[in-house]
Image (cartoon, rainbow, N blue to C red; front, side, top):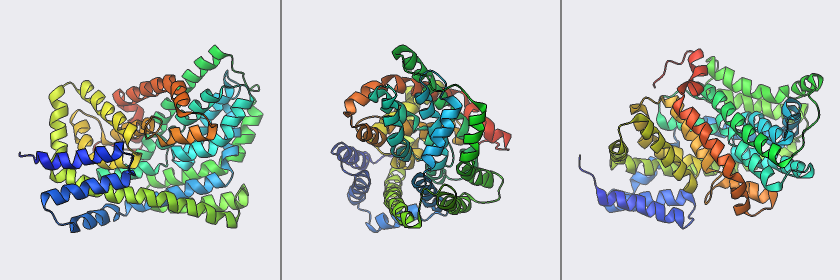
Length: 435
């Protein structure tokens, strides 16, 4: 097979140059694709055709609904309820507020599906609260931003929908089910390092465990947690499609936020919807432009070239799996999550499948790698949000994050090399593997 090396260089080099010059990622993707098309003498009508094709998908209609559900719940005062529930569960432990932070992120992630939303919503409450109780501000911020990654694994996650659409033929319901245990593995890993650091630094415990308080907080939070059941059970049981369940969950979230928790007024709904439009416009522009970039990659046979390069290093499946993770981690340091999913999936998924990694398991691996990337400089958006909330220099936060990075990578390796962590729940519900 002949490769157009010059066209590949135009595409990739121009893209990397613009990324390092801090161009907005959507512009970087679109301009590099245009340069590649022009170099090959292809009509620019291809650009608009592929952009429209990229967002012309029924499955993608679920994305705006999931984003809206998360924003409405965030505006509706759900954060405080979930913090109280987490405190009742694990606040009694050494470093209790750090544990509360991590468990609350697991709960809240199932509602927002976004690490940025988790950090912005819970972080503004948790970081000052931890500092007031004697925790170091950098430690508090590191716990908050690292635990926010759980939100991208625990369903419903709109990033899972984007991955399912990009990969083609993968069940969204299976991806949703697959996220629970990996999210728990990540949470436990973070709790272990938080406990070690809390013990070493003498951070305080919370109040003694009370079953009565736990049941009280569980009753209060049940309305919020039920939104997850609507989506996951509806999709898995085949009652709704992912899009239909997301639309129903939006209506449910609206009613709960206004009439049950009363943290949101009808006037405040418009502010929430404005934020939804801002977020959604970014996501859809990225999807549209990334589809053009992906078209260029495919026509230039870059996936096959990358596969040959990776398998040429070693034929050992463990080595190849580690290489795939390293590539995704490096991409996460310089790119946002949606473009990584859209651009890397056609290239790396076939390689992962060739060494026996199931597409659903690969989706979890991909999302966790991207989540770690959100916490790393130079383009870690969640790192920036945490630094802004804490009003601390980014380099101080990164230094405190070093042990958390290590334990997140340990969780990543567990998920990579033990397929059952991702697949046992989908298997229990009849997922047979493959596409």
